Length: 416
Image 1: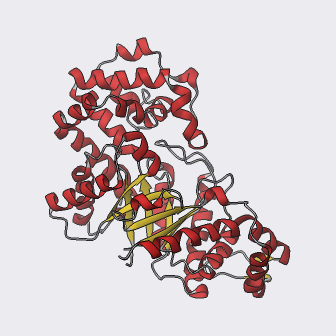
Image 2: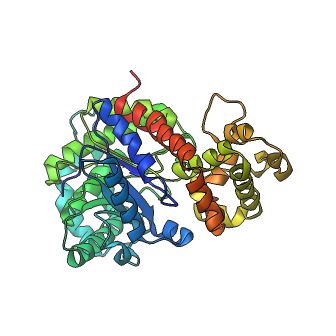
């Protein structure tokens, strides 16, 4: 199974917005750009919502049928490990092997020595086409890189071979190292790809940790120029590594927590055009936030539900934020009081939540808390899902506009 050039992970917490999400990618077709949907949902999200991987497959198949989508599409076993992959085996054809927790775990000394022997020809000046600077590689660099990353690559190999053994149909493999303590440099990326190739993993996407903060549902925090340089170098490394190590021609970068990173969308677009490179952009909670926005716009009980989600989220602040501590930055002092939020009309709630950087009412702390507050909505049960059904039209309009106008257009189409 060969993945297409442009793909987009479209996470849907509650599984009601498949058609609205796909509608955004249909709009891209009208601009002559093909962006293939990948419905992604992690084991953690399934556990919190009370769904199963089968539900994601059902949603994807139903959306494709309803809209008459004639292109490929995928269902991603998102951020899986050896302990939970089996539940996704039947229903997924895209597997994100999350091995970030194994970065820094010691590999067997024999494996380290084999890694060094395989790469010692690069000791000295490593020149990669399309990169102006020259990487100076020492034996100690190989020892250090092997020591940090080889254990993670070995674990990815273990998961990959387990999938191959138990799944009889083709699938796409992504290796994910984004949820780690520090960014991987382009030189490290080169040798990580060398190890992936040696491990026999036909990776088609790789998700490194980039410099800067990729907080959930809000804009990129960091040096945009530094990111742009790093991103372009990673693209150059991938193109060189494909030829150097015999990796799949379709191998491309995957940007996790990619939703709402508006300040780097321009650099990403220019880079993939410059290198004629593919891209996988992964989004998740942004659709759930558009559901809240749609409910607030609808008013009445929809607005009341949105306010109740915020009230409960504020009360459960520590419980909700702890699992996402590395990817959120919330200042509790800048969160509106419950009494204040409960007095808002639908327009004020919407403007406070919607990611419009030019709106002085927008509150990124409020948005981040609600981003991780989907557990509260799940605990509402039928009250929440019935409201999604009742207000389907207004929610769908917001979901489609958000994905196309704020994500697909600036990254894949370009703003002209």
